[in-house]
Length: 132
Image (cartoon, rainbow, N blue to C red; front, side):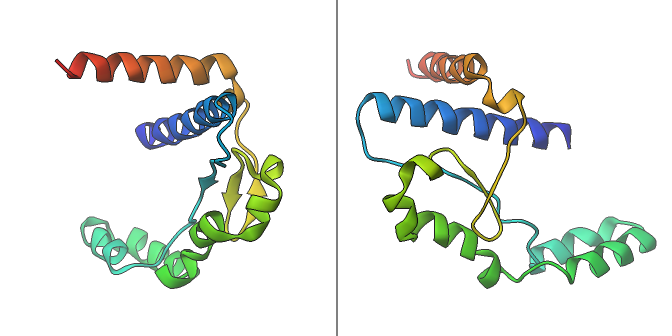
């Protein structure tokens, strides 16, 4: 879970630095973070097979509260196609969308501009080393 959380933090840091760079270039692109939320899928059910009975039962009970993929996709579709995002880009730039189309908040560390830039530069450095 720690790696998962760190990967999500990196997503937030990256999207903020990407938006900053797009703005400097004067490009009319809006970057967003989309949280699809929990999704009830067949794949999720198969993951439960190795868990003990009580955990499986509790998770299956909770899973019934999750939307199906067709409903869960609404947040991503909103981010990709909602006219309000184009009409009001300053509101939506780098925003974190919770289901469905609710602007959420990110942690304080995710708003650290120095960390955003550091992640970008480190990624560029690592990728540059891979290209020989």
